[in-house]
Each structure stands twice: as structure tokens, then as C-alpha cells.
Image 1 (cartoon, rainbow over the protein chains, first blue to last red):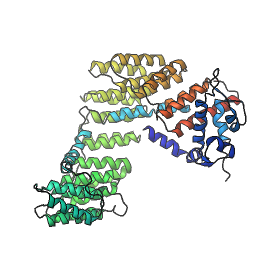
Image 2 (cartoon, rainbow over the protein chains, first blue to last red; image 1 turned 90 degrees about the vertical axis):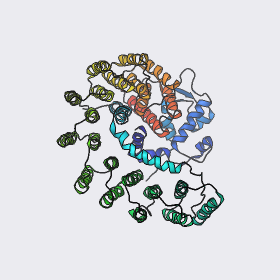
Image 3 (cartoon, chains in turn blue, cyan; image 1 turned 45 degrees about the horizontal axis):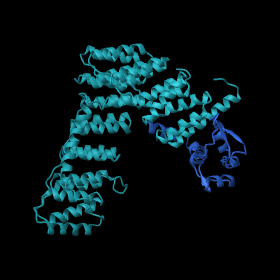
Image 4 (cartoon, each protein chain N blue to C red; image 1 turned 90 degrees about the horizontal axis):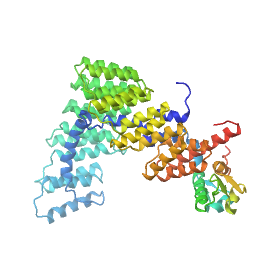
Length: 100
Length: 467
């Protein structure tokens, strides 16, 4: 039942799905970080999030905040600190909507 | 019903819950005829087939090439001293047919009979060929002509198709999604050789219900009745009623009940359960109770499924106190509430805001030796989030995690939303990680929920909303 429901949710909005999982040519800044020339928005997010976790970049006093290192700053608008809540939005900036 | 927030809506149609209770009805080990009975002839055939398959040599045939297969067969015959029986031929044919085309298989069969005249193909030999041509979904072969060819071969060999043949063909065609072909074939076989038995007939009706319109199903039933005197029985009606209930057409269900009573059938527990489920899914608790009362009037003993369905329905329509009363009634009648019963009740309590009572029920059920399942935990997690008891929710989530239980979409979405609403974004990320890790949800589903939740809260914050 559940997979069916999910399938339905996904097929309900194919555009949104494509937007999330289609491979996209990356801008040079992101290319260095990801180490690939193409990736999807979803896997890019996963990459950044696991990078934060493996390097323990979450602020020990407030886990909701990420203290960016140089590498992260490069891709997240150069901010020294980023709220976890805005992470998806910041990553989305690298994936502009394709002009029709 | 007015406007319902999205997370609650998913709870209304809590997929696991409905699925559980409904799937439990047909698969109950209790005296329900149709799943067991319909499968019986199938099993018999399977047996007779698997008997012929059991000594199947593991991948004797590597290529679908006919010449090679023939020479392999010749070398087998020459090298073996033991008497070779038809079972040996059948298993060879079976393994060859599974990798080759039907025409080559027939040629191979001819070769076997020619070089080894003592082998006379029997019914199961042709059944092997028949299942293979029924199962092929290749558009080039997916016409009835191949099946006709095989059947003609069978008849010309002096073996006339019987009920087993019909059953086999119908089931193979249905599993290959060729329902229309099955209908055509069953009509043809009924007029020429042998009408289907009630099991194959019901199997086909069930498959028709799944994929075709109701009028087409009725037309099929009518035609079978008038032309071949194959009449629907109680199981057929149960299938039909289940189908119309699932499409929320309760009026048609009532009409069907009248018809079957006119035809002299007596509704049994299983049929009542099915109708009750139909009402419960639409949250029409009073009608469900009516069915329950009618059942008692007619002297049909309710079973565990009846109570589970009723408790589910009453909980769903917000009549929790009645549902609780039923819990006592069923215990008096000697039915032990199972995890489905408790989960349904908890769902109802959570909706009423009696979350702590639901949590207490979890303890009670564990004390009585009934272990909660994934759905139970998800229901409670959902309820705890709704009533904003985050610490308890985290505790429960921890328990789920240590047991490796999966999250379902509804409780995941609610949990993430609840955590974000109190600013525990890091925890929400952690839940996201667990959902992906435990393969509860696909990455896409988990991420898009997280993303849209965060987006929504950001927007709400900008607009100065408070939670």
C-alpha cells in the first residue's frame, strides 16, 4: 500500500520529481565540491549533508546551526554560519529553473 | 467534513491500518472459504506439475536452439540405462520450454515421441505447453492462436481438455495480465469441451473486477449463466461486493445482497465482514453497527475480523467509547484482541486527543502478550506529534529505531513537521536520515517532505505566524 501511495505522489507531480532527480551540469564552484560534473539536486543535498556530518560541522551548542568551513563557504554564499533549515533552499540556488 | 490539514488527512486514510484490517479479512486463518478453496485446485495442478518438474535437471538446456536440444535429448536416451518414464520427458520439455519458443517446444515434443515411441504424451505434457503459451506476454505471441494450436494438438492426440486444463489456462493468462484472452478462452472451452469449475470462474471474476468495469463483469457473469449454465455462488457475490465496497458503491452492495438472498444464498460471516468494511471505510459507523446487529439476528456468529473491522470503523468515525465497549464484548465471546484491534483503537483515541490513554493501551497490550507492530508505533507517533508531546514522541521514536521499525509516510511527515515547528531542525534531519537508512521511504519522498516542510515554515515565519 505504502509504495503505491508514494508512487502516486511521485507520479502526481512528475515535474517536481524531475526537478529533483534529473542530472544537471554543475557550475564550477559546485563541481569542485561534489567531484563530479553532473549530479541531481537530491544527491547534491545528500552529499553536502553527509559532508556536514562527517566533518562534525554542526555547532555543538546549537545543532540547528552549521559552522561552515572554507569548502562549505564556497558553495553556500560564503556565509560563516548556516541554519540547517535553509540548507535545501541554499542548495537549490545552484539549480536554477531551466528557462523554457 | 470541512477543511482538514494535510497531515491529518493522511491519518484519516491511514494506509496501513485500512490495509491491515482489509487484508486480514481475506487472509484470515478462520473458516473463510474462498481464499483457501479457490486456491485448492491450483495447488493440485501445481502439484501434478511440480511432480513432473521435481526431477528437473538443472539447466540442461543452455540455448533455445532446437538442434542442440535434440542432440542433448538423444545423448540422454543413449547414455541412460534406467527405464525412462514420461515424467522424465515432461521435465525435459518443461525446462526446454522455459527458455525456448512454443513452436520449438512443440517440435521438440514431436522429436521425443518419434525417437522414443514408448513415450506417449499425457495430459500434463500438454499442460506444460499450455502454461507456456499462456504466460508469454510477447506481443508477437500474445494472441490466442498459439493456445489454439496447443489445444488442437492435445485434442488430436485424444486428450480432451478438462476442468484442470481450463483452470490452468485461466490462471496463467490472468497472471500474465491477459484477462481479455482468458475471458475469450473460457467461453470457447465451455462451448467446445468443458465448462470451468467454480474456482477458476471465481478467480477470473476476481481478476476482471480488478481491471475492468463493473458492467463488463456483469455481462460476463450473465453470459456464463445463460450460455453455459455456470452460476455465481456465494463466493462470487462476496468478490463482487468487496469490489463495489472498495469503490465506495454501497448502494450496489446492498442490491447485490438482495439478489443473492433471492437466489437462495445465506450471507455468511465473511460476507457480512466485507459489507461492514465497506461502511467502515466511509466512516459510516451507524450502518456498520446495523450490519453487526443484522448478523446477530440471523444467527451468524461474528469472528475476530468482525470485531476488528467494527472497532476500526467506530474509531474512525470518532465513537471511541463504543469501540472500547466492543473490546470487552469480544473478550467475553472468547476472541482475543490482536495488534490490529489495539492499533485501531489507539488510532481512534489519538484522534480524540486521548493520546496518553492510547499510550497506556500500548502497555496494556504488551502485558497481555500481544506485541505491537510497525503500524501501532506509527499510529502512536503520529498521535503524540499531533498532541505536541515531543519528548514522549522522541522516546517512542527511539524505541522504534532500536527495533529497526520502519516509519510510514504519514507519521514521518507529521513527525518532521512537529520537530520543525518547535525549531528542532537538527532532530528533523536525524529523522530524515533514519527514514532513508531504514529504507522506510525513498530518498525522493523523504527529502521532498523535509524540503517542503522547511520551506513552509520559513514562509510562515516571514508572515509572522505563530505555532
